[in-house]
Length: 175
Image (tube, rainbow, N blue to C red; front, side, top):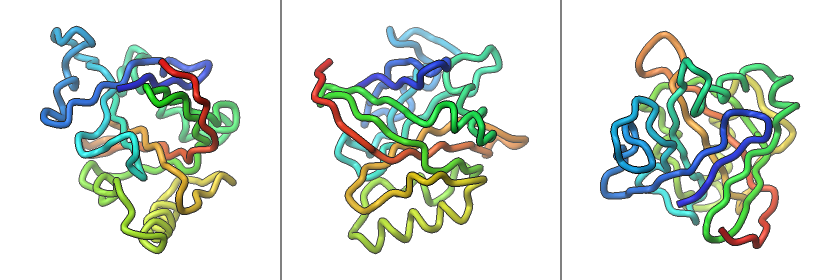
């Protein structure tokens, strides 16, 4: 469905989306052959119009896939890598990192894909901000799309680190 890139990091990969089989690429490569690192994939109930697009990728010990996402625990790394690019058939969108959060894989954030209204959006942003390791000055406003990158991190199989970014601009560059 697209391509995710964070300049000067290992994050530079296609993003798969198979709504009927969400985790199809968890352990398959782009050609659907077995791969322990898989391919980053978009949450099944997401669309490119979702208020919060969630993309999953493995935190590989060899430094590939979403391993660099864990470096966002350090605010200096965030300052040096504030922008996430997500290119789809609709064009290139740029997102600024807003928050870095350690959560569990069953956290309610994973169920937030569409805001019912402005209050719902603002409440979700406020709750995740309270849980964040830190937030930046890129505070989301209702109507701005969010992009969440999720990877395994921590001592438990249910621990996750998410980097949430807010859409800052669109470029009508087609794939």
